Image (cartoon, rainbow, N blue to C red):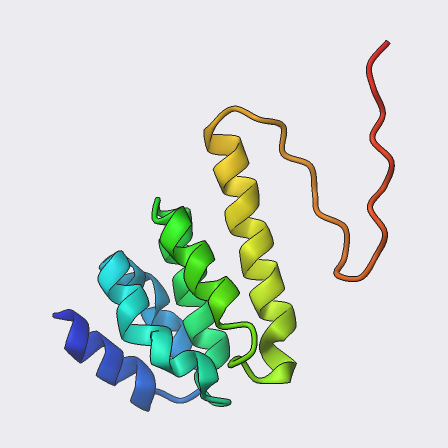
Length: 120
């Protein structure tokens, strides 16, 4: 199925079934991000768009996924901003892991960061 058809199927799917389209859309990489980007402002589709973009970022398009999610912060409905923060944290953690850096779990949004312990 081509990307246009996948986007149409996801857009018209019930909210409970929509997630089934995430991986098939995300497999299209940067084009998938472009396809779902307008949905970031839509109260019915924003959470799904965030998950597609996060998955594309996990598949290697970390810079583009991060840029799009950061720039969408003001457009995303308030109730989906926690999902946006979650997606950015997951992309950041995978990016660190791919370059061999330590991966530490991020504190919950709004929580103070724990002090770092240095090995002796």
